[in-house]
Image (cartoon, rainbow, N blue to C red):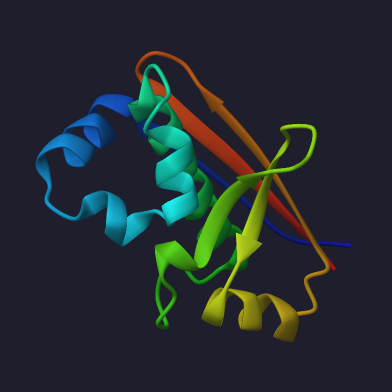
Length: 124
């Protein structure tokens, strides 16, 4: 049974500006693993933007937004063994999903030059 669906679209130039000019932006919103994945990439802002969109889509699917003490860094985009994006949860995000009996989370990322987007579907 589908328990939540979230989607988000973000402008890549907005994230590019934040990752280059805002002190601590990357560390506030992204895990060490996400930073290690994005930094060496050509067009790294697109990769950061897609991950940021996935986190926003997750919060929308959960129905909470990023309120109630949930943190962006508690939601990490990782790649499965075949490269498919997946979400790894920690802290309150993980606890809330367990309490709501969310058994599986699907995530899809996309990006082009100026936009990045994500869709998250939660199953119970």
